[in-house]
Length: 284
Image 1 (cartoon, one colour):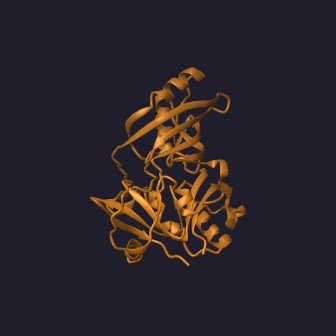
Image 2 (tube, one colour; image 1 turned 45 degrees about the horizontal axis):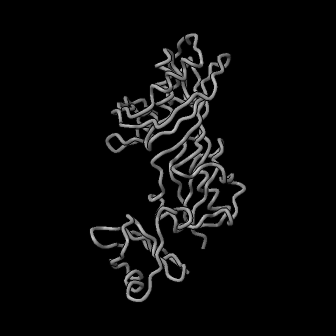
Image 3 (cartoon, one colour; image 1 turned 180 degrees about the vertical axis):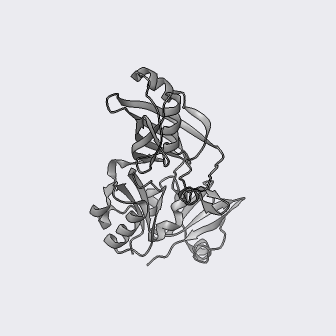
């Protein structure tokens, strides 16, 4: 049974769920799941967990993400991207690259951001996008975000497009950031393109297209999570681990992989002065 992670280049014609379905079919796996859904119009890095790796998908470091985006000025859509309908139009002031860069830099740091109404946020048990599609009023409270770095890549004045690169905290909406950048440039705008280039310490450099994926592209669970140490266990500790019982280890890491003869058995979580079972893995 194949267990591990894939780094996939999501292409524009696929949704994130499409990628999951294609991988199941291409690799004949029973279960998979992805980290950090990309909007249908967006492309770039998607991390996919296969079979037993789905149990530790939440342990993948996704606190920061990096994107490359193209902001189309002069029009705003209801979805804040190229898939929506135009709801606002505005003239575009005469802008210089220096002015745009200064505006971009003004967003660097911590702030509060109002999510797009077409988002997966819950309102009274319903998704915001479901309410918005039904014509209901959607009021989402601003949420704390952090822009770690942001820079201008290109300003195409004839196409009225601002291309920028940005590194953000988890939970930041780049569509909403585009809206706010356009507003600060005294106009309106929407994202015409969006590409995710990095999640945590994983980037696009070794990612593969979903229709080209092969079993050898799967990265083992422990190799994909190198910041979680591994420890060989035996004797009494092995018996305890196989039964999911707490163990005392001379370690301080928040999580630790426990193996026997290099077979991954479980991941344990530190609690007080002992380690308790977080998830156990099926093994052959």
